[in-house]
Amino acid sequence: MIKVTNLTKKIGDVNALNGLSFDAQNGQITGLLGPNGAGKTTCLRTVFGLLKADSGETEIDGIDVAKNPMEAKKNLGLFPDPCGLYERLTPREYITFFAQLSGLSSVKAKAATSEVIKKLNMDDIADRRCQGFSQGQRMKTALAQAVVHNPSNVILDEPTRGLDVMSTRILRDLLIQLKEQGHCVLFSSHVMQEVAALCDHVVIMANGQVIAQGSVDELCEKAGKATLEEAFIELIGSDEGIAA
Ligand SMILES: Nc1ncnc2c1ncn2[C@@H]1O[C@H](COP(=O)(O)OP(=O)(O)OP(=O)(O)O)[C@@H](O)[C@H]1O
Image 1 (cartoon, helix red, strand yellow):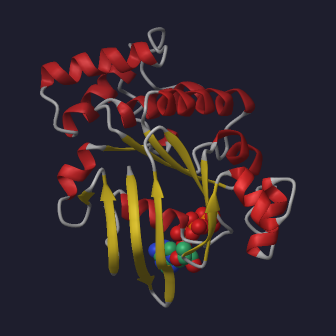
Image 2 (cartoon, rainbow, N blue to C red; image 1 turned 135 degrees about the vertical axis):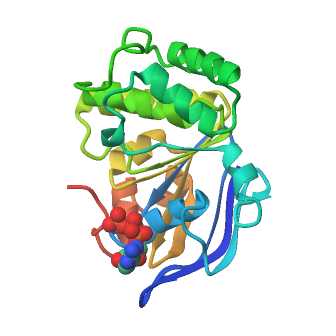
């Protein structure tokens, strides 16, 4: 479970986070929606401990990220930019390397890597160098890296940006798999259909604050609209955050 409470973060003159509070539960996919500059990336970076909030708390499974970052991160996987894989490594080498960085011994890292490769149906590419991989193959490798240490929580910042239809479908299926295994999945997106199709809980934010949150149905009901896209526009007061 991920819990952020009253987070504030000023970057330069901008209040990127302005008293942000929400929970993301285990066994659920939670979507962060908001217009450009709403604070989604800043929020996810703070959750991962890459940024330090000025005030407020972030907890991963009850562990305070600011006070106990190493312990908190053991329970957290961050889906990296799939373009940034080490081209000369095979997925098996790459995933094992990150498993060890997460604190697993060499033997346990190898076993965990074999397991995640099987789980994500990657046996056919596991021992090829990443160079030349398709976008879908890159994504699977990146996701395997994020979940190899079996974290209970996974965060993804606009994971389907730039992906083709097939790769997007692969990623969606993987996120549903994680949810069904009881993980807490938190991701940001501008794609309304994706959020509506995948998310159990949606947090709409603007100006570093939560504007509204709930299930897609609850948000539609609150806004008096039939679709999430219309509800978003009504609640935010503009259509700025919707992907073209
Ligand atoms: N390194 C930085 N320097 C200056 N301003 C920053 C920096 N990082 C974030 N900000 C500002 O903080 C605010 C929140 O930015 P953030 O990237 O978190 O928004 P976002 O919701 O992820 O936006 P987008 O949907 O466009 O990716 C914005 O006004 C942004 O310009």
